[in-house]
Length: 90
Figure 1 (cartoon, rainbow, N blue to C red):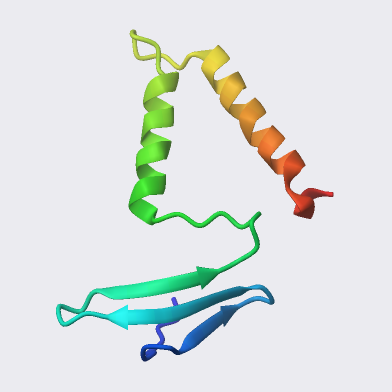
Figure 2 (figure 1 turned 90 degrees about the horizontal axis):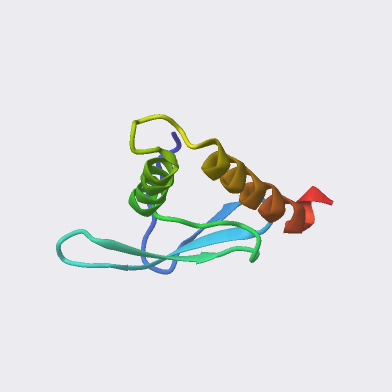
């Protein structure tokens, strides 16, 4: 992990097209970041992404605790469609 120290207004550039700007730092140490990235780049907070993953797993489980194959097939199809729509996949 790379650890950087930045001040308000300073930026971090990731690759050619992702820019993270320190917008503010509150007295209690809370940091606000601004993120500029192409639309196809997914940006999620870790806790939100983990909750969505957990909900997907729970919805795919049948009442007896086994995995519902139809639910997983549907999930896989949605993921494949999302990848096919991404300009990076062409």
